[in-house]
Image 1 (cartoon, one colour):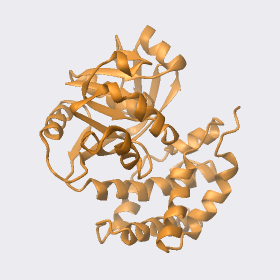
Image 2: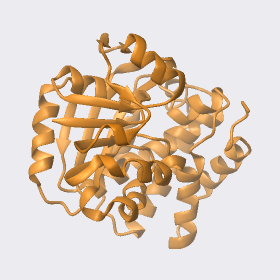
Image 3: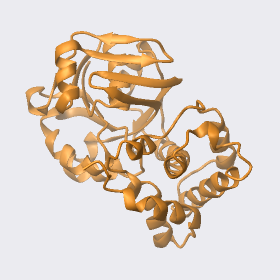
Amino acid sequence: MRIAVVGAGGVGGGFGAALAKAGADVTFVARGAHLTAMKNTGLRIEGGRGETHLVPTQATDDPASIGEVDIVLFCVKLWDVESAGAQIKPLVGPMTAVIPLQNGIDAAERLIPILGREAVMGGVAQISASIVRPGVIVQVGTFMRMIFGELDGRRSRRAEDFLALCGKASFDATLSEEIQTELWMKFIALTTNASLTAATRQPIGRLRDDPDIRPIFIAAVKEVIELGRAAKVALPEDALDRTLAFIGHIPPAMKASMALDLERGNRLELPWLSGKVVEFGRQLGVPTPTHAMLYGLLKPYIMGTSG
């Protein structure tokens, strides 16, 4: 199976390396020093799941040089969705599946006008990993899971084939017939974790059980659940309990990628996380005071401080 991984950061690099190790023909689309390092010395994944060193690593900055593939794992930052979506058109054939694995809730909707509805699936990535230096990605903890599925809920041949490949790789994979529900369940936890770990500059383990901070977690989670219900998403009745249980099992050292971007002075995905919660709240008439506060606190850093 031919796979293109667009964006070789913690998510794309982690899953792409595992799929390559399982025998897939994987090419990474990257840029800058990270691309140079992958070409020269390969891609190295370190952390709780052990070490993988992918040598040689197939990598390029030109999607057109790859040709049509079976699967595109689309892992760019949320502000690059439209521009990167246009650049990957040469990768997409009649049966190609593009699986967005970003944070946020609307990447698939944003890609459909560019690539066509048939090309786009829904995807959820659950992994805590980041580039620590060019060519090297470190994963926090051992949890690594991908959930994907057709947006209309059908079990397609291409999805079944990809599931079989994932079964040979070293991570958990689920083919979901309710991918919108899965996307929202991730969004509920992710947008809360991202804004709170960023606003406090602290890992999750310092926050989730603090008696003064836990009520903020709960309030933020409840706001996104109410948004999902107002948007007619089929969320489970115990969405709050499931989300708090998930947060409770995250490795204590985890910081969301947005918190890491803040520390590095990089641009933030805030407008598509707490900012999107606030936007949806206004549209649907759902109060979102906790996320509005978090958005306001982080707003001065949206465009980064390193430049």
